[in-house]
Length: 412
Image (cartoon, rainbow, N blue to C red; front, side):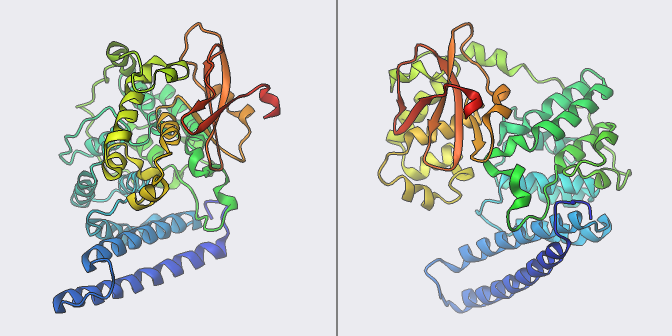
């Protein structure tokens, strides 16, 4: 067993169950393809769309198998066939969304398993088709030297993955691999789990369906950058065995250049004021004025489908139909702004089980020398949301979201 938080018998059952699920889904696809040839339509949804969704389901089941196999302690050699099957399933999901974290895991696993370039190129084609714009994925693919030329400074999920840029910069620009190794250790031990508070990674092992959680991207970075990860050997979320499974893959880092400082660029481009809702300037830092103003305007003018797509709300509402249903009364704008400002790292999101006192240092103060107070955003779910605002702020709501001042942190 590699993940001591897992139950061995449950992992074995999960592997068997998911393999049976995949077999049944393959049979279903054969039936649907036969129906298409004969012009038979058994379901309200068209056959081709069902096939795409079925392949996506197969991919997710296959990913569970890979996670369970590694957590169980299986040799990486035994995982390769299942991994390659996962690429096949991904290639057939059409317009279905695979999910950023799932694709990052697949790419990182491919690097750790030292999959050949042709299969990595197949995976890269899927990532391109999914329109993933992410600096970490760009770095990993470019390092593999397979002809990936995308180059963005954005992150599909900024917290925690933007922090990997520091590891890369310390190793390649500062040429201090010892310091980069320590930064990697900090990322895995202090930031990775915490950066997934909205997915409750910290308590995942207490819930049904737990097959392990592994920071595959951290191990892939250690492998590419040649970092000493010995301090993480016994970490329950660092795949140390995979990081040292093979040593035959070469990486190209000659293209790397230090990115332009994002903060400097943002400072130059700040547009002050929120004309669509001026009172929000009391609680929204100037850095985010233009963004929030655009969100408000778009919410009132774009269709639900356009808005959901533009602001990548699939992390909250996987299906646009779910979003439309929740938003049919058009009273979700405050909640959406909170979600989006969590992504911008202005608002801190915690699971309801988390204690604020353990995370208070993670809340950034964007108000300079102004005296501030801590407020909570009362969103209608089981999460907690906090931010600092000026002490003089006299606004008690963000649209439908009530704001409450946090008096004493120790009592939260």
